[in-house]
Image (cartoon, rainbow, N blue to C red; front, side, top):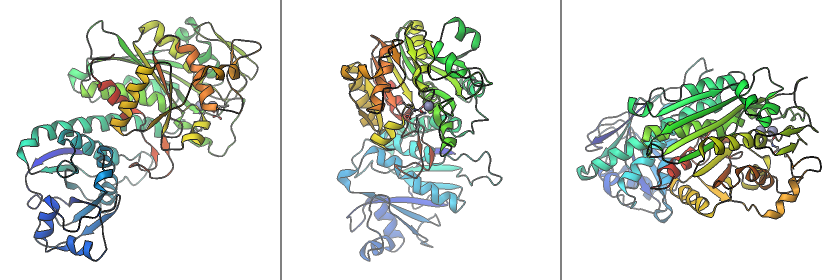
Length: 505
Ligand code: BES
Ligand code: ZN
Ligand code: ZN
């Protein structure tokens, strides 16, 4: 789908669908909506007066005016209360628009830019979120559908005001690029587990820069390390978890050099369990099919590299993704085994289903040793407990550095991708101390998300580090927060914002 700026008048521009908007409680529409209403004989004002439509958040009104406007259909989207309006709502308005366009098999959509005028948003930012919403809402995984989904070819944003065309165009470009990178990652997460095993995830990572502009491409370098190197580096966690599968583990390392040559690195570590059966501590059958998304953290980190390159972010960023398949078999690791990780710390395995922290322990150690990063962020579908605590609205966040946590909170607020901090008080440590080794890989029934985070903290050492538990938000069962059911691409919106912050590594 092409996302474009058209400087002109929505009344005269012809598309299959024209989109205007209304804040809740407005009785007489103004701006572009008012102009459209006047041209089509007051149908919008009449709908408001008769109570058919009142601009509530998420509400829409479809009209076939027949005259007065070049486009055959007009959709009015409700923006909700003006004081509750945010940039992220601009993104979310795209979903009902594209759902309708797909249903009616429309090819072109023209929309006014929401929120830039009376909404009070900065035009560039409004444009960014608008384009991001259009890109994300057009996403559909239809690889295995005999009948492919209808696709909108052009999404045009109509801006009357020539003076803001520059910033609007820049914002649209940024939003479209970010959305494209996120959708690239969503495809990996949606792939059936047999199609994407550790070797498949590594192959996809190798194609990370495909389709980017040459200038962006040449700043990316992806290396895949196989079992030989993983053994040589004594990555006992990755080796143990990967041992039950026919496909051996890979360590994917994707560098993006957008910053000063020789400048410090930001490391992104992502859980890449391509399928989590639980291993010998086998999960129950119900819902196990969903464990294909246990590599969403890894896909997200790779997508963040793609986004950083596409956006020309001026940072040196490296993504480290341990890719394994957690399977039960005669060669699988067992409860009771004691593992020696790359860092030298030993871990007693109490459940082979708490595998994410074992592979992340090695990936974190590797990132620290090889890159000495100024900051490190990991993302993982790590605990079911996080789904219980925060649901599918908000990701869990933990860390060892107040400044870095504050930056993440800022990035979260600015991007609209919600994250909430949980405490890593030292009293939690006793829950993961082992009698036979240094640590054990589960912390008992209480505070499961925190004890998993605390486990990782033991490997982050003195590197400023933040952990994101995305188990609840990386996949949504129902349409929510402007996403169709399926993979959301979390936490790439948050990370893109974080990496865009000025000055800091
Ligand atoms: N991948 C799961 C966590 C998960 C659960 C992600 C539900 C998404 C939805 C993880 O590897 C796991 O199995 N964790 C266990 C840990 C427990 C054994 C301490 C869990 O959460 O039950
Ligand atoms: Zn597991
Ligand atoms: Zn898992």
